[in-house]
Length: 381
Ligand code: GDP
Ligand code: MN
Image (cartoon, rainbow, N blue to C red; front, side, top):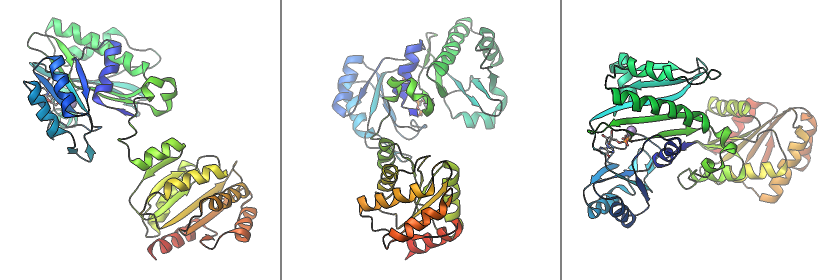
């Protein structure tokens, strides 16, 4: 789960990383009031889950509350690479002498968290990596040993920082960033830019914070930060119902059990010349409620013209799934063509149940490929 800048900064604040004072605003008037309360100048910042807001016109400096209001008008509703701005963070403006970069993320290859620090901040880190790779200092932290103060020193000296006060402040921030990363089960914590003010104060001017979805149960306060309105409405509905769903842009609705089989189903639909409308994993269960929930999400997408239901019975038996499908169809009164492929435990029994009682829009195919071909054909009809 990705957090907005202001939410990431809130977590930074909790671990003691210095950030600027700010207020959230959802409309121009609130932005004006925020500027009044904070005192000008302020920066008005678009809150969207994508970077490069500055270049896209999503970050503007205001020297008066009236100007903050005007900027808010211009930024709200702006489309930044597919993300529409609905919220603003109005922050006390900082004077910037230097812009550094600091991040902590997972290096999956090394199976360890990885710090990256460079004095060339402010721009995209990928650009720095390409143009001056030597400027990036990298350091792994062994998760069992944990973070040690010498690691901060290595990052700082490695980047060539010589100012004693900066060294001290940044060492503290590095250590606190590791705290934030472990305490909130983060996947990524990035500060770009980490600024030094003309007075020599170091502060996080931006935040990119990603928390492991699987750990959210341990952080109800962070889980609450999720912005359902910003997500794709179908994906939000799916999450509400506990359905694993990713919207794609084709016409064949895909429903499988298990992430691996569902991925293969997406592939085989493509192989058969069609385009999958979604990825939807029923998970381990195949009970009627699970099927109803998944189908109700899939069919909410008007692009879906046919549904391919691909089930491999393991622990979930095919006869149970077949009953679930029938019960779900009975409850929903679905008219779209549905192609079912059942295999695995009790597949024979499951197919028989479907053949005996299935409505006319449901057909059963013996193999995954044949089922995919049929679904693609029906979607095109
Ligand atoms: P991003 O473009 O989405 O990464 O957003 P940032 O929060 O990193 O802001 C982009 C740039 O705007 C920064 O690198 C700064 O140069 C500038 N900026 C942001 N906040 C301030 C501020 O308080 N004062 C000044 N002078 N510039 C700022
Ligand atoms: Mn940034």
